[in-house]
Image (cartoon, rainbow, N blue to C red; front, side, top):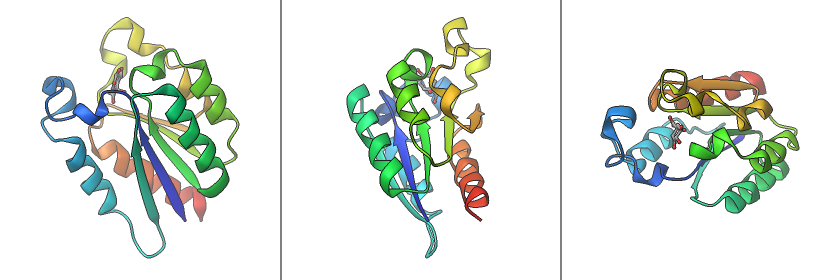
Length: 142
Ligand code: DQA
């Protein structure tokens, strides 16, 4: 199976961005951790973009060629109907991951718009949330 991991705006700044919320490890550390989960049967491709349109392009590609999507849409999670629509249009499982616990932060972060089109939401588990998401998608694929 082939899993696509999409990270949205400002997640390329992991490591220096608000370490209280997101920890001190970098985006490249995250990618290494995710890629270590790949195996003979599970290919994982990772993308990051700060642009809404680019993220939608990745979702559309995943819908055609992949078996599952893991997405952290960053702040777009809270207001992007365009990403919500793109995710609703794919026929593969979608897991939305948030590194921080969005429910215990500012009020606006509790409004999860894109997650309306996801099969599962993982929030507040740090980088491990992505690993949980991979395990979930592998389980769904069986
Ligand atoms: C985030 C939470 C969002 O509210 C925030 O805008 C992000 C990261 C998270 O991973 O916890 O960019 O999605």
